[in-house]
Image 1 (cartoon, rainbow, N blue to C red):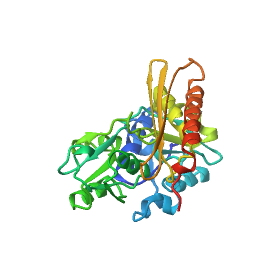
Image 2 (image 1 turned 90 degrees about the vertical axis):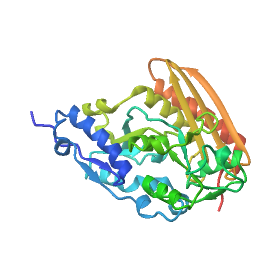
Image 3 (image 1 turned 30 degrees about the vertical axis):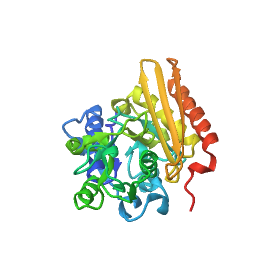
Image 4 (image 1 turned 180 degrees about the vertical axis):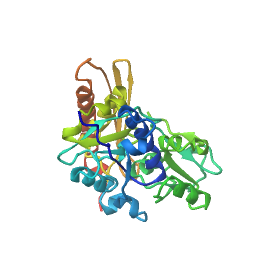
Length: 317
């Protein structure tokens, strides 16, 4: 019997991406019988994406969030890597032919974190304060409750955004709590946005392990699968697909699984936050086929929101 060849793991090269992929590397290496040799049995392959290279413009201006996954997916299809670790919120609703999301690990905190040198919450910000974010959803949700705020386009990795805040380029910023926790930087958070009143990006806080279709049942993937997270993310991404979620739509979705009961909140907002369209749904899931049922629930809620919002929820040039 031939030995298991190394599982080459593709990842972006940012500090956060390496922290996330390193967590998965150690678990995959252990499943392959090489917990003490992770770099040998599950080496990380660093790949710089277009989204990493271009930092001075919004993603919607340069091709959307697929720019964080495109080069990594090409490496998968070319056989240069065997698996990829992505932040689920960066994975587009449509998958390239030949690739699948083969595993979803247990989710971190899905909430958005509010960070400021001086203020505790969004409501504490003074009139006309500058809020730094490159996310259309975060901007719209904040403008919905504080239309006086000035939105400052702020891209870059976590350290870059925190440095821009420290330099006074914004009075406050919003970041994913999950990334801060994985970087052990949770102490910078002043408060959290309520995920029911301000649903995060679909899949936020979750990771995606992507493989070629023929590798989707590889035994080592069981080491990184978490069924409750996969079910919740299926519902959120079902809504994303129905809303054709992209960098041109402000879409949020938050699913919670308690026992067999799945609760889902979906919303889309006009880009200026002046109108928001929401649906809440709940279902008791069957033992078999739970992910498919969850995805269908998300799709139904997303379609209802899309009917309500129409073209108003799409950012036009």
